[in-house]
Length: 398
Image (tube, rainbow, N blue to C red; front, side, top):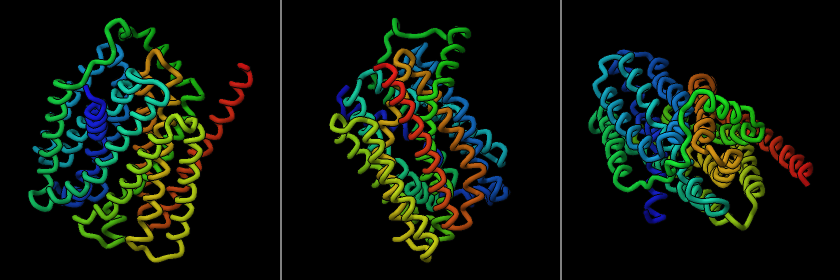
């Protein structure tokens, strides 16, 4: 499969997870009204999606280590299609919660197994370059999803958003079945025997370097994801935009992600991964500090409230591919399982942000900006601890 097509397909598969969040955000209030649910109950459809997704991504990679990458992706996309149909047919908020949970169970496979595919195929700078190109194409999803969702909702109603997601899952299942290569040969697979599997999970969850890097990725991303989750309030209440105006936020911020991913690809082989991460973290720190100052001292407005977030995503996208690959490199013989554990921890943290942190902070732009700073500081502390551990290990080995 040609490089560009592989990168595009992997990006599209990884996009299913965030697409399932961003596409229906403009319709969130209408969903609550249509199903006689409160705003809080409608908001919990995010948590109902993300918690099962966090639990299931713990297994996608291990299953793909046992049965192959391609099979897991195709079956998961078909299940996602069926779950989206349940959402279309929902007659109550409880039925919608069930459909969202089923979506969460299946949506994460493309993201988890796609990372393992990258590491199956490539090493070093070449892997960073492909991961960066996947991230660059993947970044289009959050820009397109809320705009597309807003227009679908405004023309056809909120159920049509889930019809679109069902069609997306079906198309990706067909494309994966036809074009995605199988990158894990049978002789390299690990059977799902409980004993060895439990030992592999224990090894991953007790490796400090892996945990520190994964926590850094999670914190850095959640500094931005906080705004994604709060988008209806941030954009419509604080900035006064209509439900079709989500693009004024998502296009610039995702543009920052794309530019950052392209920069990361160009830096591959020129800067070491730790130095690339340090550059991205420095840019995020400057952007988060500017965002907090602007939010505290100026009236909320499209220009001053969006540009700092865009700069943050630029730095985040520079650092993220290297952080992700360094974490996976701890486990070269079972990358699928490691990718699952990485995604599980990230989704668990994101679920906490969706269910607790975002609702607590979205009442003011200053609260959201403070949340970004807090997440980033936690991420920087985690990376700093990994850096100290990395140098101590190298010194001991030398």
